[in-house]
Image (cartoon, rainbow, N blue to C red; front, top):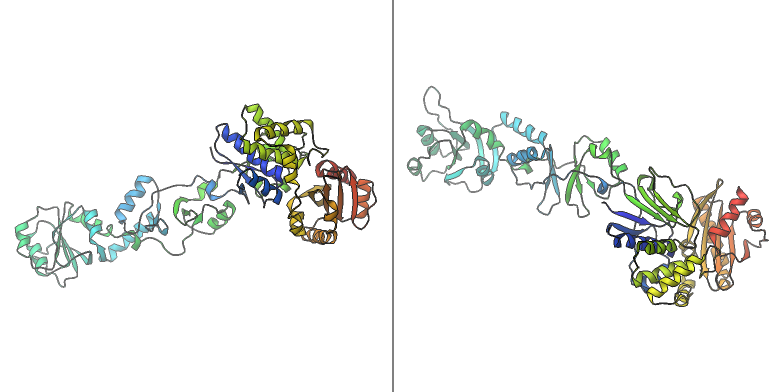
Length: 538
């Protein structure tokens, strides 16, 4: 089975990242072995601290799940090096049922492409031009299954006009000039004439080799080759001894990489005329070929969504992916699938809580390190169990996981909300760390949440926050931008906003001053902010 990517939402919080990692680990431990956890954006400092504490590296970043060349079952024909003969290339094409073969350098990178049409065109052109230039002797001997009877001056290359020695009116042919490759059968007079004329090469076709005759001309410059084939076949095979580097296409090549998206590949192919195209890996080495046929039904990437089910919060290109499952604790949104899937959507405070229950149902215990990481995710998403979204199930499972990890809830809580270093971060980075986009009744808004233990120090940067929020509003065309400064100790939220005063005051039945108001008891974006705005906007 192909790889299944488990991904959370954009601007991932700790619960989004950890639930993806925990679920991938669970499925792999169950025997699937092909689940990979991914993330869509940069990790928050909180998430980085928790991953480092329990010894985990960051999940792979997934920028897009549109179908790529790597998702296609493209052809994997053999490849040939430039020195291979046309004869061998033609046989290779026939044996593999293909009309095109990539030509590669010794290191596997692309040298050119060779098609059956290239071979046919070259072969037909030799009818009008019987001259061959620097034909490698090694190639010629291989194609003719020949043996050297006499070296002459020839060392590695043979050049000359191909001449078939057929006597005229029963007499011998006289060869003018040495720039000849003479083919003859059992014709001693022709052989003597060729050797005396010092032609470049004499090819004896299908005859018993007369070593005594050849030895009489040991001082001749002619290279003598013996082949078991007759003259007619030999004359045809000589042109097929040419190395394919002389014939293959090398200019204006169109090739694709494994990472190229099918949408882009399709556009390129429609503008070109080739039947097949080389496919290259990240090192530019040839790994196969694709044709128009392969684009008809490309294989989609397999995706499991955790901690979200809204397309605006999901990975780009999701419409081209195959969604296999959704595991979430948020409201149902607009994700659509092409076929029925498993959806697990439960009213708990953290998606990681659902994953923990799935571990129990499978009878598999997470490793101590994974259990500790899962505790941090539950505590983060439930704001140390103080969020109204928190349930008794969150508390029970968090404590159970803590026992497996050999840690305490208090220990993790203290590290989660350690304020050290936060004040050194820019306002934009703090806002983007846990930022989500929502579409409600035609309104588009962005809502960020910063969990802290000292909201007073955060509000001291109010002007900086509002300036950044105004920038985000204009840049993304939002109707409103909200920043929740959720104070764990005060058990409430300082709400900063850019947008309509009336909307905020009517939604929360509170009076705002200078784009700010305090909402006691409000700890959850999902359960206490979004529902109020949804009710107001209808």
